[in-house]
Length: 118
Image (cartoon, rainbow, N blue to C red; front, side, top):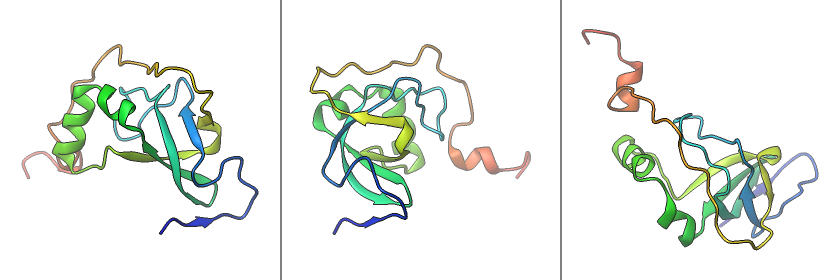
C-alpha cells in the first residue's frame, strides 16, 4: 500500500513519472551523481518523494553504485528525494550523469562508523 502524508501541496503525486535533476547525488555515496535517473513516485511523506527506478535506469546504474548498495545492504531500486531535486519526466531517452571520480573509502558503511582498532 502506498502512502501519501504531507502537510503541503505536492507537485507530484503517487504514480508520477519523474527525472532526477542534474547535480543531485546520493547522500550515502556523494561521488555518485543521480541526475537523469528516471522513476515513478511510490510514496510521499512530509514533502519527500520515494522514487522507484524504472527498468531502463536500473540497467544503466553504474556497477560501482550497485556493488556498494549490495555490499552495504542498501536498496538500490529506489530512493527518497526532496521536491526540488525532481522534475517531471519529459519522455526523453535516458541520459544519466556518470561519476567523474570514484572516491576511495571504507569497504562498507559499517566501517565508516567504527573507531580504529575496533
